[in-house]
Length: 600
Figure 1 (cartoon, rainbow, N blue to C red):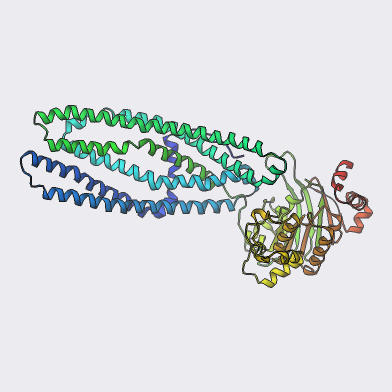
Figure 2 (spheres, helix red, strand yellow):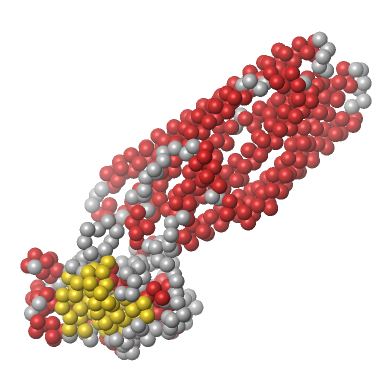
């Protein structure tokens, strides 16, 4: 679940603060933005020439002078020049919007790479997808469209009122009283729009999260015949989004409808008082027409004021949601020291390690110590929830361990560059994740330039060669999302090949044989023994058949080392390991862990 917003509305100060944060992304491209803003000002002056020259033409005709060649040519020239300048201005502003959105997406994606388990436990994948796509698109739309409309509104007001004062100061003053009403109504609508915009973005995140979770679990849903229930749940989420979007549309429509009413009031005022000035000769007919055109220049942008407020409010909410991620510190700090060696020999030592997950009431790992010599193969066993995976994640700093508790070659893991640590300490996780890419690309994910010979060697060691050979396109076989086209055992062997090909000084295998048969397991273990005689290997498994080949076995329970030793030594101890070996030998592997759990 994503966190709820502490503040449901986005008032003017919060809106400006949220948008002000974007300056660091707009700054590098401000030159294009300034050029666009200046060009719009020039375009507005050329637009003002049309009413001025129209007034000249009408006044000449009223005086009986029909020599209108120069005013007409001036109008044509002003219109053409304005078109060219506006096109140039729009191009510059929209190019800035595209560059800013590109930089935002790059920075957002980079920031996500720095986050760890705690972050993704708090924020859903669907929510992050919504922020990366929809929220950044709102900011791009604000710059490319909202900025243009706001600039036009400002320039139109300044230029329009300036010429209106020139033609008829008194008539201009009559139009000022409604302005405070416009400001008050805009403030009220902006506050309501802020609340609606925040809810729209939150419900959109819910919609993305629901869709992502549903598609990820589609096999489970279909297997349990829950399609209709999921459709109903999605309909409720979809309806919640539609309801808040409708409310936002209602506010926007009200604002857009109110502005034409203001224009109508202005028009009636001009026709009434301005018409009387024309009749008594104090205002020329051409000047009256020009004044009316300048009023339209001022009022026309205000017709879309609701749309502008909507853009700014939604972009403000989007900016706040993005910077909620940008401002979050990286969970894993990469601060290497000069003491870390460039090549790891393979010694691993864990000294009084304890770890508790945020919000948990008990330690996942408690005062755990162990040591692994270079070239040694060590197995770690224990029932589900005993802390094995938590331990492995801390070795490669997917979870940050407590200071000076995990050492590689005598150096704390925090002093290694993250890239070096995770390259030379290769972790093959228990969840065999594969990308929707060819099988070759999955095996060589960290280095696509590897030779075919090395790829086939790794595939052979992982007992995957025959499987690949059976595919029509072999290594070029395209794997579906998350490896859906492969069986569980094939996915495990593919991820194992991806780990073996790296030939890392320390290889950590987190229960990588659970979906393979015993014959395949024996083949892989034989290959590991042959290939990694001088390299360190950590095996996490529930199978005694896997652990028995290790130089030393550690048995964990409740985050502690329960017993340790060689296979024969642990059998003699008649503890948890010996009982597990007996259960697996007598009853197979289908129910051994459950039986042990009950008996203990």
